[in-house]
Image 1: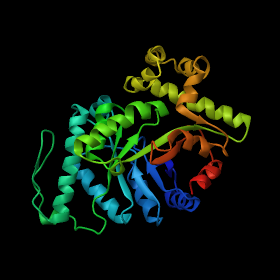
Image 2 (image 1 turned 45 degrees about the vertical axis):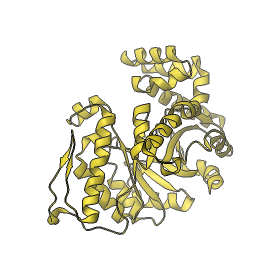
Image 3 (image 1 turned 30 degrees about the vertical axis):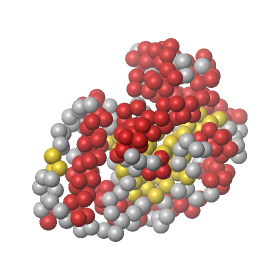
Image 4 (image 1 turned 90 degrees about the vertical axis):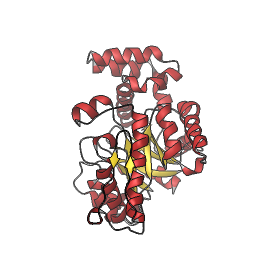
Length: 338
């Protein structure tokens, strides 16, 4: 299992220094997300400032962009980072795609299947200098003149990882992707009983092996050096669990554990914008929820707990800490994975 740095903040000012620090500490990779900043710009800085660190998007919103636009950006980043870029894609939800990005929405699994195929058709046309002839239901790419085709480079197209929660997208990752980006709102049981079986179904359908798809997890962790730090971390992670738990898309995770009523309560409270009550549901009335979703341990014990839960299940792990935590807090974890 490789250890990555959880979602590189795209709002920090000195990306190169941060990336060099992470590489020096021993992290295998770093991920940037598309939330309130562009996910690609910091990865260019991070990749050019380092020699070994892998850099990737977790995630970039695929349906907000044309496959041609994204193919160009990803191909360039693979070149500028000398083969260390990972293109991690997600769908977002209908409301954001239509109302925030003003882009069309359709059943996401079928659209993502076509999207990945379009990316690879474009890259093949560039790599092999062949005519571009991709025609699908949602995307058509049939024009590529020499002036607009980038020269092939030694590192080729980047690997494509897909973010998935439900079984349909997870199966698709097994069929067509190089990696699966597991959502942080998951549990060891959900991974074993839902995520990985769906991934295996996709692999079997495509005649592929498990080793061809890297499973990456940003896992929730509660840690601190003092009782006060632990309490602050726990409160923040409970709020994160409550936020995701109130969203219908993540309901299946709660249902697997028999927490249907909790899912109903959280959703109803979130619709009423009673955020403080939502957090209370997880923080006080459902203490087992925190233990299921998060590793809760002191800094010296985090590595052992992560391995106990996820060895054999995931290939890459990063700490999802929804609270301020200095990098030094994770030094024992990095040392154990080094």
